[in-house]
Amino acid sequence: MTRQSDGRERKRVLFVAEAITLAQVVRLVTLSQSLDPARYDVHFACGDFDAIAFSGTALAPIPLFTVERTQALRQVERGERLYEKDVLVRYVEDELRLFERVEPDLVVGDFRLSLAISARRAGIPLASLINAYFSPYAERDGFPMPDHPLVSLLGAERAARYFPRALPAVFARFVAPIDAVRKRYGLPPTGDLLQALCDGDHTLYPDVPELCPTRGLPRNHHYLGHVGWAPHLPLPDFLSDRGDRPLIYVTLGSSGRISALDTVLRVLSELQVFTVVASAGRFERPHLPNNVRVTSYVPGDVVARRAQVVVTNGGASTSYQALAQGTPVLGIPSNLDQYLAMTAIERASAGRLVRSGEATETAVRNAFVEVSSSDALKKGAGTVAAAFARANAQTRFADFVEGVLSSADSTNHGRLRDSEGHVR
Image (cartoon, rainbow, N blue to C red):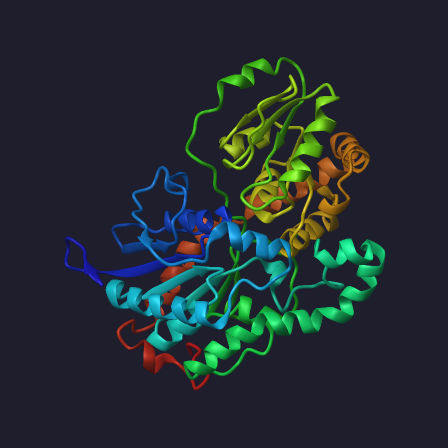
């Protein structure tokens, strides 16, 4: 703890993000800004990441080892697991050293799966941020099939029949190194990938139940609401070139399939629209259609508000940003996270999904025409926007932190835990 000018102690809150995708970093950045600096001493740790994620804040991130981002995204696209046992052990040991340096009263993590081990080893309460569609308690008919290489081998129809039978073995393979490291540090195995993804003394969902419903939720699982983020940038000057053409906002973020973006732009080049592409530094073409402009980043919330349609990789980050403005989404997902988010959005009648492996010009054109002209999808997006507006994630998070840190003796974390390592 550190002391305030009046002698009261400020509690230390440490945010630790996996730094593979932009969303994993900026969601915690946004939540960190909800805490009153007069009452909380905020620290942030993550792997090397674009400084734009921290623009407009006073955060000075503590460097922390993270798997190489480009390689990790390739592994996700191929359906391979991200972490082997030796990598997770390094994560845990680095985090334990980080805890010794910062001495936090609370750790908040986003997809940093090792924290459930290191925080318990150190006796520090952990809040884990994860979308509700990954929850073991999520209402779902099944899991959508991502664009695994198996799809190319068998075809989408045959692969879809095989996928439910293969899923338990796939999940078991992904959780195996996590449970091996848990055993090394004296913790019982989770035995379940979804439990491992959501593991923490508290689980925080950057969602609303209207979009991602759950059933039988434990008391230590909490809906925050949509955690929005946009870079602190002015609107680009080229928006004045739009005239009276409908604005289409396209971004596949830090993890979308770039080949799908080429297809989208070919389709939109034939239409009487004006397209803005936020490339996140991943897309460069010397020649672009006359109705397309590309820049690395834009204030996405403002552009989404003005857009007729937002085209995304289907993931929660930009898709939710669009829905928060009442703008329907055309999502082109490839990995499981993106398919789960886009499946929820389709279920809410707020957008349409086109599989990235099947994103032909015809499929994209047909979906775009539907999304841009459908009153039902516009209405669905508005319904989600209203649900997001009712749930102020930053206020809820600040209240959550206040409740956790005021109800526990933060100098005796170890005595607050039961035999399973959970805070009582």
